[in-house]
Image (cartoon, rainbow, N blue to C red; front, side, top):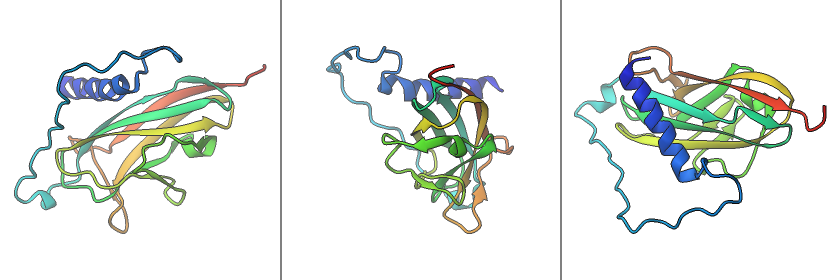
Length: 185
């Protein structure tokens, strides 16, 4: 992993975790918002000919790594588009142990993302050139064990769907591991 890509992954994960207060224990009070101005999201103007660019993006994930069977589980993705506009960002979850086979989708999933069992994965809407999006997939775990998951990214606005590649042109694949423990052993 290049230094630039590692830095982008760390910034993406921190961008997702800080607003969620994931660093605070459950039930703790959060600090009141600071009086500073709300930052305006930075969106790069699409260059001339953006529609002719290859589908290129970078992605990182933060996920639950150890939970109890039936417990609250989530995967948070940060996706940055470096290529042509993506008409319908598809997150295909069938790599490895197939995340959707072991989870029931719960409330709290990013509103723009809808389950599509035919993929199997999620359709999360458009992602313009130069934009970054945080996506949260919330679920409950259905099976105990240690699992190895992966997600691939596509533009689902075309038929057949087109694979999104990383900035270097390789397959864009994000992987993570999770251990689900039964409540009683």
